[in-house]
Length: 183
Ligand code: IMP
Image (cartoon, rainbow, N blue to C red; front, top):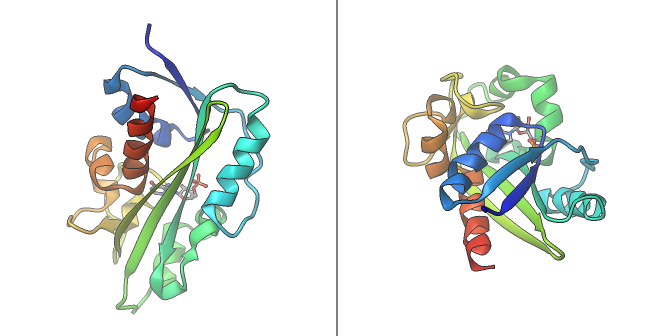
């Protein structure tokens, strides 16, 4: 019987990305949308650590994650505010803030928190740039406006498999998977 790993998330796309990397290893991945307070913190790590503390008496073994887009010329905005910024001004709003801006460097970051009696953190980041206009219909969130270094395509133009080869989440998941294999 394959071991079950629970991913606490309401985001189907994040789940699909995790499945793409974890299923081939023989683990069974379960999505649970339990909800936990996403505190307004100054780092992704704090959000994840708080989430683990909140859930660890309710679920035995699980992981959750928090991600953000950090745009250099905007002093790393939206960063930890990526969710409210996406739901308010969206990609069009971010592109407007970047109008006539030459420095389009940005970094996507993911922090995964895994709990199996003790907590462990895995991080991944992806350097890239903000596109001049949205491109592609795959993925979610800021995917159409983020072009990772080493590609001419935005995440929005990539399959899940391709995005995982470049992405912040793909990198964090691969580190997490190394840990799962060693346990
Ligand atoms: P959270 O990790 O769900 O809090 O995500 C923060 C915000 O960033 C949300 O608006 C997400 O849609 C967006 N986001 C998180 N990860 C990604 C990604 O891999 N690609 C594009 N947008 C993302």
